[in-house]
Length: 398
Image (cartoon, rainbow, N blue to C red; front, side):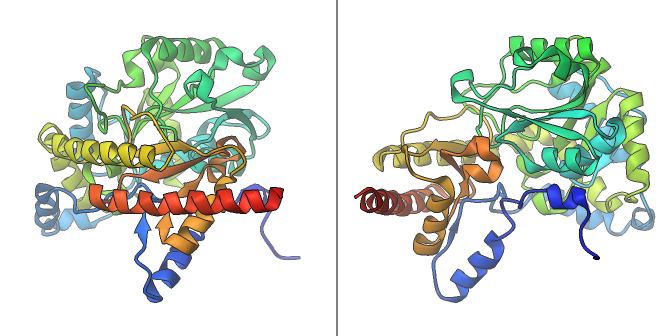
């Protein structure tokens, strides 16, 4: 019988898959929908970014295939930015690779470094591209729950030595989506040491490195000695510069690992539009002037949301990074039922913790993608959702 293969069938449903159609139906019926689901910032990319794209459109050579080499200006700008931002020097030709958004690079890395049957360590809750890459590469995904009592850190030291010996890849993401956790320096040092000891490739997903608050500075994994032996770090233009739909990012690492990822991608894509990459180069060259306004905006939204959540009985600590709040639900309230009720009855899109894997149950995530006023309105509606779920639970218990 013709149908999906075993690897495709093994993939769980993607947490955002159903939301657009439901949201469209509600809007068409006149519902005022407030979308706090996807990490898709409102507003436009920087004016200078848009202007750079318009200018690049008139350069004939940028309309040709970029292949994996991509636009040399983008690679150069990424290299310069890494040196300014983290003090880390990388060769723009051999150690930096343009991506069609960091998501595809994260998934495709498994195809480059994992053999069928190898273990791949995947955090849960976590970004579903990690699990997808592992499953589609024919690996054995080993799910490691992230626990609040351990500050949502994925600790390789807690895992069995025999498991680590057969692990070829681990996905790590700090500042973290969805929990907003940040990683202290001593944790990163332990992580790199374990990966070196067991020869595990470390996929370090770092798209939120600049969306940080209250003086916190997110590091690069390459600030840790020895990381260049094992790590590939992934950066995105989406979160810091409101360029989500542009689908641009880049991977950084030693020439062997970057070359392996480039080889895989050469069989899958021919690169993103070079004019987009030219505009991204301008953006990275001007990052220090562009990021502060976004951080100011997100800080105001974070503070408004934290205060509003406390008012409805869902207190949460203000995170030091990302554009998300990871909110614990009262005992007995199912995250999927809560988020479904919020959408269907209150017109508020939030993501259930279970959508990030079973380890996320008991939480839900909101994205700081609307104004403080709209956040307060949405959270007021979530208060009604919380009351309705509690009432339904009491009725069931009775």
